Image (tube, one colour):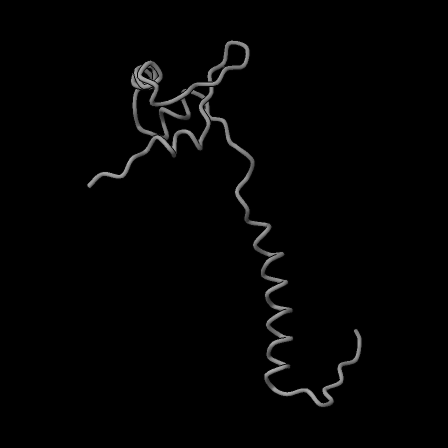
Amino acid sequence: MGTLQLIEVTPQQLQEEILKGIKAQLKEFASLFKTPQEEYLTREETAKLLKVDLSTLWHWKNKGILVPYGLSNRVYYMRSDVDKAMVKLN
């Protein structure tokens, strides 16, 4: 570890340097908690999350409320689409 010399440093300058170091560490730490890449949910997972029946998802798909995505014969819903479909009630 290097040496630290506090020659002609005001308390304000010392505080600013400490804050710069802390901010850099916090920024690095916060990057570890960024949201993961887009999550795809199966029909069953989506229905369980929303506490609805699979037939309700089918109706919502037909009404355009939720947009399904497919791969082969599997159906998925994007978690962000599910979150966006939620509306605030008064």
